[in-house]
Image (tube, rainbow, N blue to C red; front, side, top):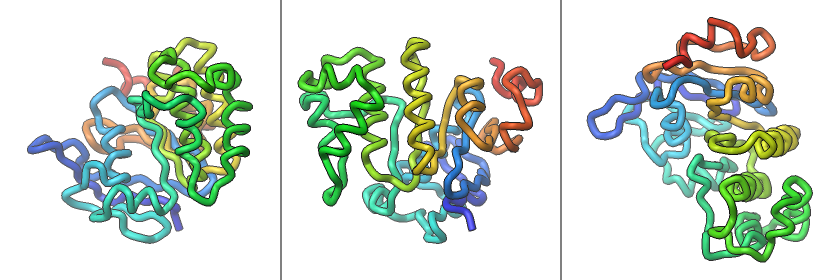
Length: 232
């Protein structure tokens, strides 16, 4: 049985039909990438799983339990974490405080801080700085660190490399690879080489539907099979 399963999911923004019957399965312990052009429904797929934008039709199950109709907080309580593209954090809190508040009630805050700062050494030197004063790259590191210490069974990650310098992208890739050792990941990523490097399997989304899928070991970033769905 899949850890997460989307079956014939239809999601709208007002009257705009964004997801037109999405079918996706994510198995425990794997990294699955959603790839495609901007605006084809990748982020909406994550939002639908989290019930931030509730589908009008279809089924989304997690460990066999239906998620459609639950509140977003109820979805999160089941072990689903989200690292959004917008790098949401508490700008008035320090780096350390942002990490501490992401740790579950029964979690080990000291161990979480050690994990975050070992993964992103740049954050340790800014631990007392307000999150709002960080650079874009540092804010992305902090957003990832918050997701990684949340002890989630499934992590939904939206465009983690967006707007980052290559050296920061390498650090983000290392962090996600480390997280994948103990967390299942559903990843949206425009950087195709990075997505294929991180993921075990992929789904290509175009115009709100899945048009291709497979093992990342069977494709390369230069394959026309994928490139035709990524070009403008």
